[in-house]
Every structure is written in structure tokens, then in C-alpha cells.
Image 1 (tube, protein in one colour):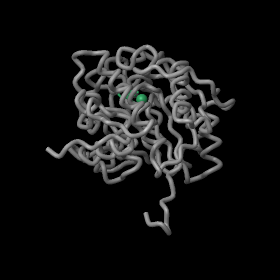
Image 2 (spheres, rainbow, N blue to C red):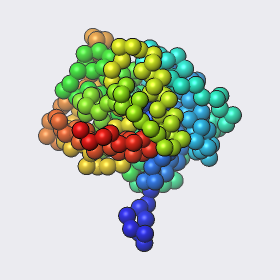
Image 3 (cartoon, protein in one colour):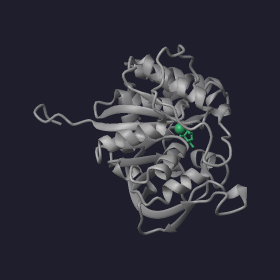
Length: 319
Ligand code: RIB
Ligand code: CA
């Protein structure tokens, strides 16, 4: 960027189930001069839709960004029921208490908000999905011409040729709503999938959090959330930056080397074996609309530097 040619911020809508790592990703997006957050759409996932939506409102309010609309979304998956992850994110969904938000959600629901925003800005808005894909699946089912209007679509989810984090086969977002994941992965829409493989390599430790020395309101809240998360489990050694890495991929196309595949996701329509629901199945390793990380393709150092920089955390001493 030069003074005469300032970078034009990426306009984004973030679909989210906050959730601690969602919260860190939101704080990064709100701190980035490269990103203009047009709105948040919420989904149940880590916690039920009530706490998830309340947390989204509270995070925006804590940074004075009640100008950004929050559109409430999915209460339950396309099929079945959400399992939630209160054991990971706490019952409230955040591991540091925030004042109850005074702002209210938009009168428009999540699916309608996504449809209106993408129709009004064809080819100009990036959608970043950080939770179960229920809202996006319903959008594509009810308005099949809309999701292709996104400039880019990035999804945190899945476990491609690597173990899951909920079952040996399934990652949490895909496990929570496998039918929604299958519908989006089979839609033929180009998307970047940040799956378990790169996410396993990008994490913060207890010591990283203790040495954060944040210089911004966003960074202070991130430090408090992560310190709270580590306090809740003496055996907790690393906090995986699932959703924050997806934000890094949205901001820096060079952070993760990608390969193109065609894939589907197992659900109750593809197998009666529920142990396989949420499993990613690659149908073509050489081509397709899904861009997924190459094995060992994530630049861990650059990704962590970007996360710390966006949060206004000090950079680790060179070892
Ligand atoms: O498996 C990790 C994903 O599931 C993250 O998005 C986390 O927030 C949960 O939603
Ligand atoms: Ca999430």
C-alpha cells in the first residue's frame, strides 16, 4: 500500500458460533485495516444460538462497534440436533465475562441478511464461515443463485486425510451439521477450506498468553479470553487457532499453500453408520472447487506473526 493508493479493505460477512476461537478471529477482523466487517451472522454450534448471538453482540459492543449488524441464525442443524462444545468454550461460550450487550440483533435473520448483502454487492463480499454450515446450506437451498455471488468463500471445518477433533473422522463444525457441510461442499462453489491439518500446527501456549503484553482493547480482550481458557483446564497445553487461521487465510493468500479437490461429506443420507457422519471424502485429488491446504503447506511463523500483530500482541523474542 502507498499513501496515494491505500489498500481497499476486503468487505466481509462472518458467520460465527462464538466460541473462544471465534471471538479471537472476530477481534482480528475488527482490528484489521484490510477488512471491513459488513455484518455478523450467528449460528448455534459451540453453544446454543442464544449465547452465541449474545456473545457476538457483546464482542462488538466491547470494541464500540455496534454499527455492525448481527443477524441471528440457526438454532438447530439441517438434520438432527447440535451437540455443543460447552466443555471446551464454557457454558457461556466465552471464558472471560463481558457485560450483557445493550444492542439488539438485526430484524433480518441470518439467511436473509446473507442473501440481501450478496445480492446488493455481487462479486464484492467475502463470506467467512467459522461454525457449522447450517446458515450457508439453508441460503443455498432457498436461494441457489446467491452464494455464488460471493467474491470469496472461506470455511473453517473438516478433516481432510487427517483425524478429526470430535471423532476420528470428523471435525466439530462438520460433525455438528454434516448434512449442511455436504450440501455446501457439493454445491460446486469455489471455496477455501481451512481444515484440521493446518489448524493443528497453529496454536498458542499458556506461556504465549502470559507474555502477550497487548497494546489494544482487542488484544487485551483476546489475552483475557485465552488466559481464562487455560485457567479452566490445568492440563490444557495449547489453544488451537482454528478460526483465527481462517482469518489469516482471508487476509494473506500466501499463508497456506492450497490444492484443488472435489469432495463430499458423509451424513445420514450417505451412510447409516453415524460414526462416519461429518467425515470428508475426497472424490478427485487433482481438481475441483474446494481449495484445501497441501500437506505441510501452512506457514506457521507468518500465521502466528499475523495473529499477534492484528491483536497488538508483542512478538516473541527471537530464539
Ligand atoms: O473444530 C473447530 C471449529 O469448531 C472452530 O470453528 C470452533 O470454534 C468450533 O466451532
Ligand atoms: Ca467456530
